[in-house]
Length: 408
View (cartoon, rainbow, N blue to C red):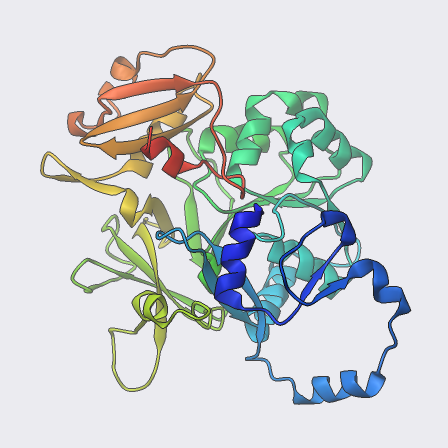
C-alpha cells in the first residue's frame, strides 16, 4: 500500500505497535517490532495460556481497510467467530483437505485473501503466494500453476478474463487445476466459457460478498451451460447466512418475484462488527431488520442491485451507485457491460454516466456497436459514446478502477 494510505489507516486505527520487516524501511513513528528479531525473543508460555483462556470468539481478529468515499479508508472490523465460521464452510463446501495446493492472487489487504490463508491453515494445505508483479507476465503465472501442481485458485474476474483473452491457456493444459473460484466483480460468461472449455472436468464457482460480511455470503457452483450474453448468478446464501432483498421503499421482495430488482441486505454470523472508530458510517450501513422490531437483528446494506431468476438464484446487476436514471428510465450499467462483453472482439468493458452513457471497452480494434446492440438492448440503454482502450487501469485489488474512468 502507498505510504500515504498507510498513514491514513494509522490515523483511524491508532495502533499500539507496528510489526514489520527491516527490508521495508518503514518509518511511521510507532513502537516497532521487526520480524528479523523474532528468533531471539523469549517466549512466556504462561502469558500465552492466560491470553487463550480470556479469549472469546466475538473479539476482533482483524480490521481490513476498504476505500471510503471521503478519501479516508473505512476499517471493517471482523470477529474471530466470523472467520472461523466462514473457513469451516469453505472447507466443507469445496472439499478442502491437506492435499489441496492453492495459488494466492489476492493481496493480503484485500478480503479475498481470507479464504486462501485461513482455509490452508485449517486443513494443512499448501499455499503458494504469487508476487503481485508476476501477474503482468501471463506465461510466468500459468507456468507456476503447472510447476507447483496447483489444484485450486480463488482469483478476481479481471485476472481470469486477462488469461482467457491472452489465449495463453492453450499452451498450458493445467491438468492439476480442479477448482476455480472467483469473486469481486461480475464475471462475464464469454471468458468463463473459454475457461470451462479448457478445463471441462473442473469445478467453477462464482462467489459474492462485500468485506463487511467476511468475504463471501452467496455462491453459485456452475452446473449448467450459460450463453455469452447471459448474467452469471451469484446464487444462494452460504451456511449461517440469510440474503434479503428490498425495494427502494423497503418492501420485501420474495424469491417468487422473478426479475423484480431491489437492493441486497445480509444477516448472519458473518456480519462485521462495524467500521472501526466510525459510529456514523456503521449506523448507516448496518440497520435493524425492517421485517420486525422485537430484538436487535442487524442487516448489512450492500448497495448492490439484485433480482431472482426462475431457479430462485440471485443475479447481481452491479452497484446501486452504478444505477442511473436516464430519459425517465432506471438503468443498471452492469447490464449494458454484460451485453458488450459478449462481443467476440471485446476483452472487457466499463460504462460510466456523465449526462450521457459512455462505454470504455478493451479491444485490439475499433468496433461499431450500433448493429450489434440494436437487437440486444433498448435504444435508451445504448451508450452514446464508445471509447476504445488498449487495457484497463486496475485498482490495487485487481478490479477495474471505475473512479479513474468516471473522471476522464
